[in-house]
Length: 236
Image 1 (cartoon, rainbow, N blue to C red):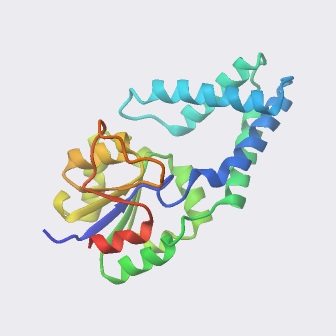
Image 2 (spheres, rainbow, N blue to C red):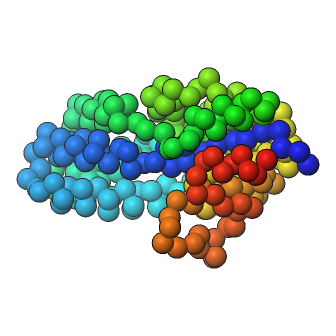
């Protein structure tokens, strides 16, 4: 069956979360300072890593949730670990500062814009299918400057479903006007992107950017593994 659409995860796939490391660090340290925490920067960051891991694990049990709620709960848990109380104004300022820094530091992965242009020229439907809230998707797509390449942009909030739940994949297929077998789905997570795309009957592509080891064999397996976005062109 010929490929008629290429659907992409967004965060981790078209851009590397590591471009936000300094933004996250500075914003968290500011939040802790505003809240009166007396801790060294590394202790603040470790508290957030531990809190994010715990909160993310609890949210993953749900087929749908707002990511803004998850990130807020992680910030609250971080402050709790640091022994200080949260203030709503501080949380709002933290989010505003964080998002401003994200816009400042946003970087697409190498070759993304050129690959999207080539795919578009071939007449394929291009879509984003992202576990993200509407406002954050709009914010980061503006920073990325790639919205004109896409025919559909689907957030988990708009779908009322988070990958790997199947409702978001069904909505993505409806918007693309394609059968599952006509879709190439590109993502960077095995348990969310690849597991859900496989279950939906799409041809899954894992972006694997580690050179020190292969993808784990005990997780859902993609149809294809690539190390850079331009390699998608060789699959069509």
